[in-house]
Image 1 (spheres, helix red, strand yellow):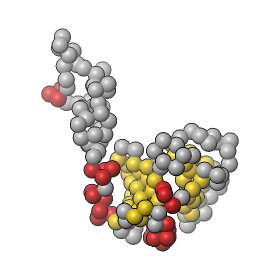
Image 2 (image 1 turned 180 degrees about the vertical axis):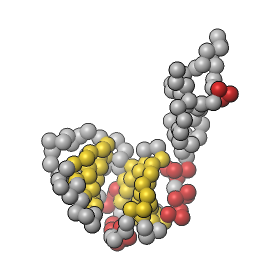
Image 3 (image 1 turned 30 degrees about the vertical axis):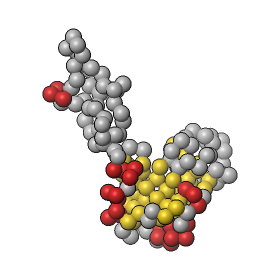
Image 4 (image 1 turned 90 degrees about the vertical axis):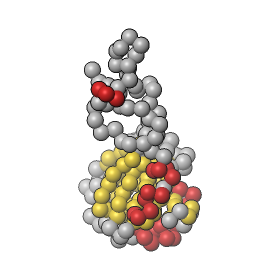
Length: 167
């Protein structure tokens, strides 16, 4: 687990990571591209990236599970298991498991006021918010038809073109 955890830019600072999470409440949950952004009540923000093989598994107080991320290990494999690296315990008795088969994912706890300094967030382009780009911004093919841009986009990068035009 230590190599997957960052506290205020320091890798493997598990002690301060845990200390500053303890007792904090979730104020807001959001995302930017594939990065989960969880703002906490104590002035810190938790960034979670599942990368290639990460999973988040939520176990409600009643035992029901909700899984997100990589499909392996399957639902048939009980949690926690050997791929569970972090368990978050909530005050209502529920739990959130962070699993990662190959340990590529990470969890970063940073001061909320420093969120704009994070390199993985700085390189992202604007999020897609509308089903299609305005007509004035759409690209045209040589014969004047609207060009489907999905093949041309570099998703979530500053150089990304415009969202795909839906017909």
